[in-house]
Length: 586
Image (cartoon, rainbow, N blue to C red; front, side):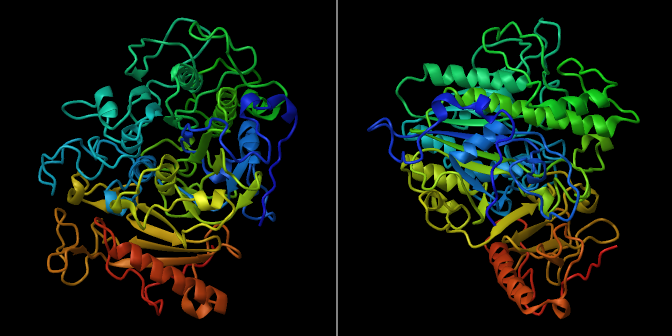
């Protein structure tokens, strides 16, 4: 289904200056110069929160999303992908983008944290090994930015890193980012904004960005500060092509209020300070005011526990999305789409309920299920907004429902810069350049995976049933989803198949086959009739179309499993559907 793009009120006020290009412009405006590339990831920005997409069903009442006119303009000049998947957690998605491989191939199965030490945990299979498979290795020769740098591109990292753990001995440092192939870095090393987003009424600098530029404290709101540095880089880059990996912290918690109308400019940005617009963002502003007793609070004000915390979190979340869009518009005023590709995506689904966090850390609104969002293998855990704009795009302003994955950014960027795709990513990362040119995509189905950092990969989790990320994978297309989950025993350990070792160190390794063989249970959903995945089907309930869809995905999930390096499960899916769960709506 073609999904219209609505520019909304005052769209003309948000024209993108130099970013605007004629519909029939398909050649580079800089003969002989290779295209620039900017890859933008928004943190915890799921498809459910993206204003460019219609809801899954028009029969339900859906919450109002934050307006994103700059993203709408970008989609108008490119392509809006409607069947785009990330991974259910942030670090896993960054692994797919950086290496072009799935979590079960590169080992990065979930968000990095205290259970994923920089050196393999004592007693683990990677005991004492620096950069175990739970995280990327900064020295990996196949990093996307390293390949771009070797091809003559300037490489710049802005925002969230979080591909190597922000702890351990030695502690994570800026050098780790540079070692990964970036010429410069400005942002935060860990998962969330360092100390928050900053800002406020006091012009005194109050937070320190991690960076390689020798810059000290700033008071500029983090989202704005990243764009200020991006603009400086673009202005001073010279004639070399560039690759920018721009990973916003927004709209990730801690949920803090973005700069509203009248917010004072920071000392570091007196000339190009932007805030939310009193008309364009009126609804978001009113929601924030309502949650804070009628007055829009100072930028950087954080949601606190209390009876109104859920409403405040959702309002602040929307303000962060709207402000991110304001800053993307600002960036695009300095970008020439005649010779620059922009790839924008969310890094996983919107934050829902996770046991380790307070309830107000979630921003999912009904009818979406807060227990089937980020970190889960249900659609709201991995479906994300995905937009591509730039030169050589046929039929601008269209939507496309071919499956696309954050892993595909890797092959696409390499095709743009003219570098052969390394063998390790072939079959998992598919270039979507053919789609941009008006053809069909090469991906037959989509894949998302989630795995606890067990001793098998150098983590510390011995009882995966207690971990917030459930082990498994999901494959699907625009209609059907097949989820394979590891069965968890009463003692919160995996249930291993006959012939496999039931040992926390070896996971469920069959030492004869070299395959991790856990017992698996399957859930199969038809999104056409069950968009919120409440009614898992068994074979006896399936129509002919549903049975055909099940057999297609059954074959696909087994193929992914057998090609994996970590977390394998030989023969996940039985064609007769004998390990399908029958789950009926409550």
